Image 1 (cartoon, helix red, strand yellow):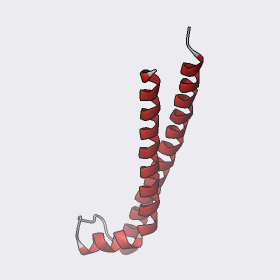
Image 2 (image 1 turned 45 degrees about the vertical axis):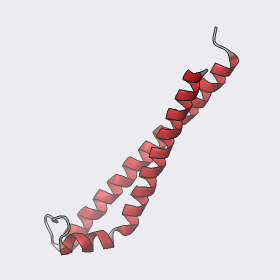
Image 3 (image 1 turned 60 degrees about the vertical axis):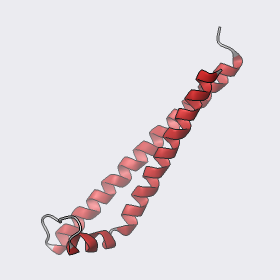
Image 4 (image 1 turned 90 degrees about the vertical axis):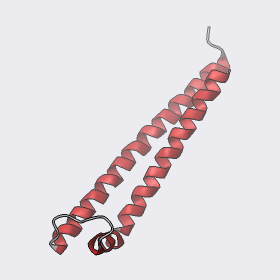
Length: 95
């Protein structure tokens, strides 16, 4: 029989897994927005392909800073949620 403490820990794991799913969905959405912003910038400036570290790359990065920052926040939130889930799983196995 599963102890009451293990049930509580399993519920914590489930909640954290759901949080990971939400943050992952948000990160994917923010990444899609970033890619769309890059494509829009290229179309507006008549550029087909932008080489990394070129002057066009630096201008594109500067003009899409807000989208990039939103993506970075979402990426970091997902990473932290995954870390918290991993910690909850280790806590469960330690009991």
